[in-house]
Amino acid sequence: MSAALNRQQPVAAVASELDVIIIGAGMSGMYQLYKLRGHGFTVRVFEAADGVGGTWFWNRYPGCRFDSESWSYGYSFSQEILDEWNWSEHFSAQPETLRYLNFVADKFDLRKDIQFNCRASSAVYDERANRWEVTFEDGRTVRGKVLVAATGPLSAPQMPAIPGVGDFKGEAYHTALWPRDPNGFGPANISFEGKRIGVIGTGATGIQVIQEIAKSAGELYVFQRTPNWCAPLHNSSIDAATMDAIKADYPAIFQRCNEAFACFIHTFDPRSALEVTAAEREAFWEKLYAEPGFGIWLGTYHDVLTDPRANKLASEFIARKIRERVKDQAIADKLIPQDHGFGTRRVPMETRYYEVYNQPNVKLVDIKEAPIERITATGIKTTAADYALDMIIYATGFEAVTGALARIDIRGVGGRALKDKWAGGPETYLGMQTSGFPNFFTLVGPHNGSTLCNIPRGIEQNVEWLTELLLHMRDTHLERVEPTRDAELAWTEHVHETAAKTLMPTASSWFMGVNDNIPNRVHGFLLYAGGFPAYRAKCDEVKALGYEGFVLQ
Image 1 (cartoon, rainbow, N blue to C red):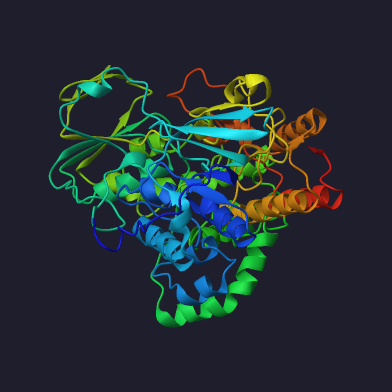
Image 2 (cartoon, rainbow, N blue to C red):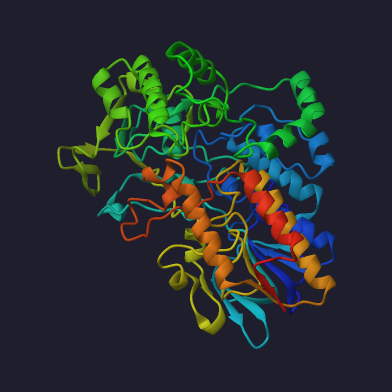
C-alpha cells in the first residue's frame, strides 16, 4: 500500500466507556467525529473498511462519479477546506472524491479516533446502565452513552436472487464491492479489452458502468429488466480561473443549496407545465436538457412531480430525446420506461449512455421478455438463449436506507430488535430516532430530510442539530433521550402523507424500499418528500420548543 494511503498513525486507546460511539467513517461519521471531538466528548468511530470515505471508498467501479456539482457537494463548514481544495471537474469522478475525503481526514487528524476494519455485528442497549454495547465481528466490544449510526442510505450491497451465482468460472464483480487500486484511490486495473461482458442492472450505477465499459469491451450484453429515464450530465473540467470564481461564490452557492427543495443548485420553476404553450414548454425543456446536472429534474416546472398531466408531458419530451439518440427504434422502445413517469425515481445522469446502443459491440437483452433462469459456469442462461461470457458485473443495487441498519442486530429496551420493530416499515421521529431505542440516532436515516437531497448539505444539518442536542443534555445533566410514541407516529404519518402528494410512490424504486432481489421486503416511502427547507424548519422548531416530542431524562 502506498504511503499516500497508509496513513494509519497510532490510534488512541479506546476508553473503557465512550460518550459517543459512531458507526461509519463516511461523510456523516467524519463530520460528527469532528464536531463532537471539538466539544470535548470522548468519541470514537468504528469503520468496516480500512480507510475513510464510506460510499466513495467502496464504490470504485469504472465510471463512478458525482451527479451533484462537485463544488456544491463538498463540506461547507471549514473555510480552510474551501480555500485549499480545488476540484478538477464539475462532476468529479470517484477517485478525486475519495482523495478529497482523505484530505479532510488529514486536515483534522481524524484517523486517530477512527478504528478501521471493525464491522459491527450487534448493538445492545443496557437498560440498567443506560449504555450501548457494540460487538464487532472479530469479537471486540465497546460501550458508550450514545450510539450514532452513520451507516449511509446506500451501503448494503445486494446480490441478485438468481440461481447459480457462485457457479460462474469467469471474472465476477458487484459494483459496490469493486476491487481497489492498492496504490491509489480508484479501481483496480481490470481490463475489459476484447472481453465478452454481461452487466445485470440498469439503475444509476449500471448506467455509469455500461457507458464506460462499452468503450473497450469485445461484446457487452446489457441485461435489463426495467429501463430508467436518464438525462445527460454535461460534465466538463474546471480551470484555475473558474475554480477561483467558484471559491469567491461559495457563500452564495451554499445559501442557494440550503434554500432549494433538494439542496442542489437547481430550484423548481414556479410556473405550471400546463399554463405555458407547447412551444414555450419545448424550448424550456430543451434548454434544461442541454445544461449540466439535475436542472431537467429539479429545475423544471413545479408540478412535474405532482400532477400526472404535467409529468406525462415531461415524460414524452424525454422519450423523444431518447428516440433522437438511439438509431434502432425497436431498441429505443425498450429503453423508454412504461411503468413510471420521468423524475418519479432519482434520475440517472449519463454521458452518451443511449449512444452505446448504436455500437455494434453492445446488445440489449430484455429480461422481462426472456427472464434469466440461472448463472452458469460459462455465463448467463435466459429462457431464450445462453450467453457465453468472460465477465459478469452485478449492478444490482442495495438494500437501500434501512439495509445497513438491518444487517446489525440492534436491540433496544426489553431486548426488542430494531428489525422487528420496523418489520412493517420504519417508524421514526425526524428520521433521527425511534422510540424504544434511547440515545440511538441515525444520520441520513429513514424518513430523514437528508436522504432525498444533495446529501452532504443534509449531513451538515443532521450533525449540527444532533451535536446541539448532546451539548444541551450535557449542560443540563441529562442522560437519556428518546422520542415519544405519539411524536414518532405523527412524523411517520406526515412522511407518508407528504410523499402521497407527489408522484414518487407511483414508481417502484429504492425510494419505496423496492429491490426486486429482495422479494419479501416491505415497500413504503423511506425518504422525506417535503423538501429540505421544511425539514430543517421542523428540526429548528422542535429544538426551540425544548426538544418537543422527545423525552429527556
